[in-house]
Length: 305
Ligand code: SAM
Figure 1 (cartoon, rainbow, N blue to C red):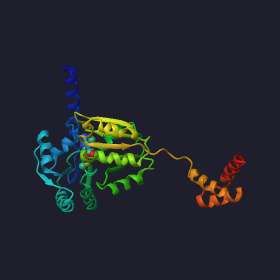
Figure 2 (tube, helix red, strand yellow):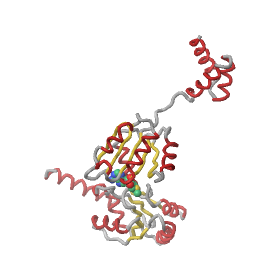
Figure 3 (cartoon, protein in one colour):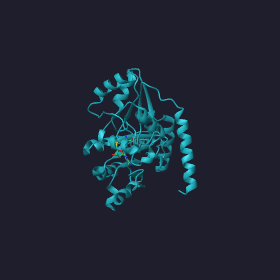
Figure 4 (cartoon, helix red, strand yellow):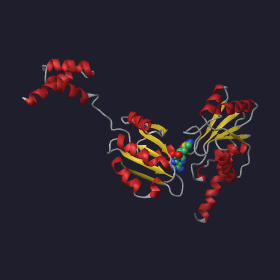
């Protein structure tokens, strides 16, 4: 950035900080604060302000959050809130909120409660009639979707798949006809086997997007048909390093309302029955309209005579 652009940026930032000074950060509320997923530049001004104002920060890992706070030059007491003690911590948090404290909840990176601890605490705070305020920011799933070019009108966030082959494949199988873009998280030591399972289950022509190291120096977003992903993955050892979001294109919409299956049944019955009987029986079996099946049956029998 040249000097004048730098000055402009500082002026804008100062104006925004001034605006933030006029906003209220109520007492007695739990602030669910998103933190960067790699690039510190993604911390929001509201997150900075909240972390500076709060009385205590409930966090997944005090060491990780300690490092984040050191970089932000913020010194606050920490309360360890991981997946094994969420219930007990929730009670402490509720008590402190009732005393009028502001409490921030963070995870190691990204948005708390998204494949991270936090949901139980939030649930308990809501049930106690207290206020929860989201401080929106980075989340790997949304970042990957936004830069994937896949439609996100509907997306199904799956998160991490089970480690066991059978369970993993069963879940993938149950999702293979979903009309939503599928979103998965994966760690580097499992990326190869997870992708191999996806290649086994999904149509080879479907697009897969591998978004690794988002917002970091070695960020990479690779998109290809599933038929090509195995060779891409093994073409460079770096392709299996880092943190991953995997997206699978939504299944192609079937616009036949079960007609393909109905026609298969119809063809079998036509070998044994008259056109009207075959149409009537197929309609009872498949739910497709009898008139529509009758027309199709007529066309098929006239073609084969
Ligand atoms: N709560 C976080 C969020 O909002 O994205 C996710 C936490 S989950 C425990 C961590 C997983 O998120 C990683 O294993 C990876 O799948 C994904 N992830 C986190 N940071 C990422 C990044 N910079 N690039 C790609 N994936 C990332």
